[in-house]
Image (cartoon, rainbow, N blue to C red; front, side, top):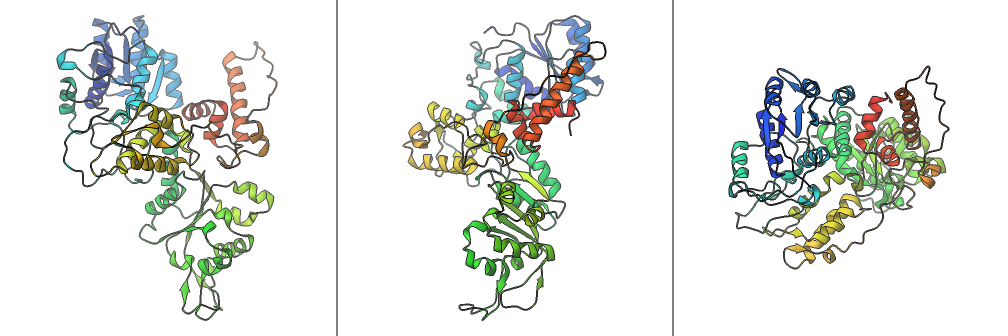
Amino acid sequence: MNKLQEPVLVVDDEADIRDLMEMTLMKMGLRVDTAAGVEEAKDKLDNNDYSLVLTDMRMPDGSGLEVVQYIDELMLDTPVAVITAFGNADQAVEALKAGAFDYLQKPITLSQLRSLVKSAVSVSDNTAEPTPSEKVKSQPAPVSAALYKPEPQPVKPIVTPPKSVQSEFNRPLTVPEGLNSLKERFSAGSINPALQQDAPILEGEDDMPRLLGTSPQMVEVRHLIRRLARSLVPVYISGESGTGKEQAARTIHELSDRADKPFIAVNCGAIPENLMESEFFGYKKGSFTGADQDRLGFFQHADGGTLFLDEVADLPLAMQVKLLRAIQEKAVRRIGDARETFVDVRIICATHKNLEALVDSGAFRQDLYYRLNVVTLHMPPLREMREDLGALILYLLYKHRHGTQTYKLSPKAQEALLHYSYPGNFRELENILERAVALTVGQVIQLDDLQIQNTPTPRNDHPNLDLDDIADSETQKGETLDHQPLPPFDPRTMQIQDYLDQIERGIIEQALQQTRYNRTQAAKLLGISFRSMRYRMERLDIN
């Protein structure tokens, strides 16, 4: 492919953001010009030719839309993209109408920036032979790049790993420490930001170290958790096995006013049925054979804090009745005790099964279901979070290393991990990499060390996955939308865009109905990204 003949113009009022974007574009073999505001950008456009313009939206002396409009006024055949931290659907439409070819919201990852440039112009992933002062190794595709590690160099032993881990290449465009030094080292060819790190960095939130990743699904999960932590409403966490349901429950507890109180986690499927009542509610000494002392149950131990009922669908019906009364009355009665003890417990429950279907079949009490399912939090499966996969792999390789020993993946092993369906989700990924580290000979993990077989991505009708447990049986059978006849089009009273919006709205609403208004699964059913789904719903005013 041909390289850009003219430089790229980056317009942003934050100097550090300009520098970081300049570094990334230089790595792609591009020449870069920068401007700190609208007027400076206009001056540069008057005096120079550019192959591409990347502009911020909000700047002290004006809007990025003015840059887009100015390019249009000059009748320049220059593609321009708008990048903003304060975006909304109306702004996106306005930018595209003004002439921008794309509209992205900060934080934007470096891989997104590369894709943005490559979608606007024909560029090569590999740079031309650089001068000695600019020589940098060529990079593979963004996700693959995150999986390559440099040959180990003598370093000081790492005693404590960083709090969070991710590839530098996928770090959002925020201001890094020592940026000037980093830029100088980059220009001198002494550093490759994708590869030169003792430990990768996996983005998350400072107050949620248990929930890592920057995918839209995980961002939405963290947003909902932060809101749920402020209240005491019961929370039902759905999701496949291994998606981190308990981690989400612990995070809700840790962000709540009950953080200094007990968090009691109970696996309902692991307790024998004949012991459930005594385990949940406790017993008095002498109440039955073997009761040689008083014992408190889970509810008393969790008093003032949070009780997490994992795999709540495995509770037998008899125990469901007793659990319902305890939740309603906020009191429990120990076996052998004549009086009830009041308890202050917040209930969070989880299961990988379709709880609604169990209610319909009579295997789970409807009244208990509505007591537990006041607010639903869905944990997405790993296969829907491919943006985070590369960084997670790096993080787990680092976590399970032996001492200061570092590991990297062979190309075939990389390919297998990136395309595996992960029916066991995060738990399975960690098991795979921990096993691979133990089995590998040397520092390069081979395909055989992974001991996995790539299988097709599970469908919603897979009997063992209970994917999201949201679609009814008819939806599961076909995963198709019902064909509806097109509404008539009258050019005398309708605009073509209004007509198309009407059709699009009907399709999206139908998909939402079939997935019980789960936007992630509706987007999957329609074959579009979650981000695109959210944008379309906002544009069409679909609640």
